[in-house]
Image (cartoon, rainbow, N blue to C red; front, side, top):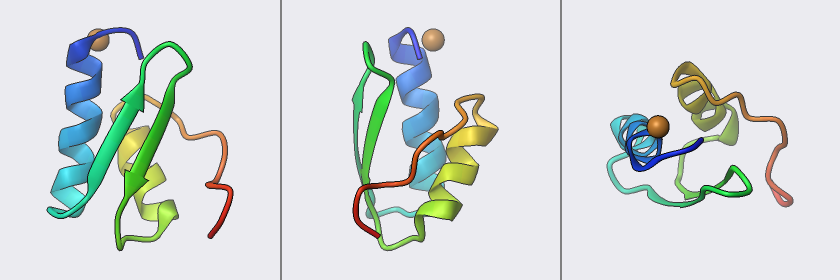
Amino acid sequence: MTCGHCEKAVKSAVLELDDNATISIDRPTGRVEVNSEQPWTALAEVIGEEGYPVTRPPASP
Ligand SMILES: [Cu+2]
């Protein structure tokens, strides 16, 4: 994830899944934090579809 366009693509993919999600992205580390009612597997899937495979589940379920 290297530029603002990438961030936007990931954010809009997540928002498409959940309108009420809040997303924060730390570009240098590639870390994405999402607050959403959706299961993380669904979120990981839409983010992966944008070309950013999710490598780690959240710390707490
Ligand atoms: Cu980009």
